[in-house]
Image (tube, rainbow, N blue to C red; front, side):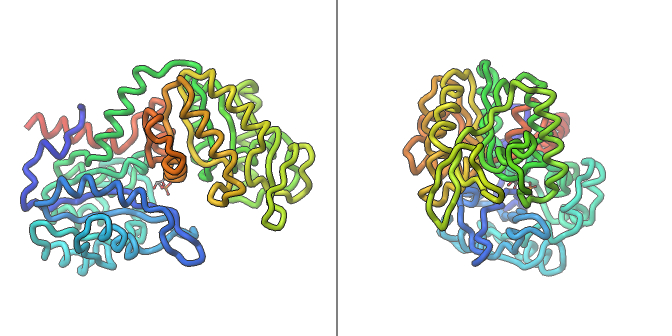
Length: 402
Ligand code: 3PG
């Protein structure tokens, strides 16, 4: 591997800065965590660090969004998974955090508060400038090693992701190690046609990545579900009323340009289901009324998409096909996952929602690679080097040349 791993270091009694991604789905009413998969995943790395003094750093949500909150609840969930005390400090770089770090003993684990409460963590930097941030210069003095394990945010260039490795020895945690190893293997055997099934919500981020995927020959068919389907159908003029999403005009214009440039690549639903007073009502897309919101795919669309999936050499599916948490709107998500799992293609499933749905359906073993990452994985598949991976490779070169 081009990156160092935890096996390359003597970890006993070392102060370790561990960047993980505990960005979880949050119920906007109760502000409770409703999907704990990413927290559970981090335990593998923590077990390897059992003799060290570990400080965990993560973000949760984006400033101003409904899922932006402190990390106290994450500490409680982690405590259950680890079955041991997790210390928590309501601070990131101040005196309280620094004292809590200095007081750690062997085997202790401390979780810092949401990294994004520091303004710097909300900006993208070059690695050199990230190393000059107050966050990195203050905290790095307290650590012996930086472990980067937040694969879902590996496409970001925030100080916690690309800054610490400039000034500290750095290696991959178990999640990043596994992702890189599996994905590198898979990408060497991936065959055309490449089918991408795209749902989920972070539309502006993904539109750029879709273009790169098509340009790099990694997306022969893009099957749109969820909010993506809404955006593209609005761009086609098949949905008349506003979708009520952020930056709607901009994303719809981008979708319109993509359809114009690649007219044979995108597939949109032919039938859908809407929510009428809690009931599932199926209809042809042409019958949709003003204000009707798509909650799920209809059976004709699932059949149409499944045919394309069964003819694929490689399938990548990201994001649920609708409001799958509600049983009567889970038809599309279940149907597509079933087709992916039973196809002869090399298969990659991305995102926490789909992974828990896969598990529930007992299909997880039939998938070549599952990942809780979303946007980072999409970008990885375009063939672009992710900033976190680059940072780890640079750190490995530096370390090995000593
Ligand atoms: C994700 O969930 O995709 C990662 O945690 C990155 O979050 P971000 O898109 O808010 O940077």
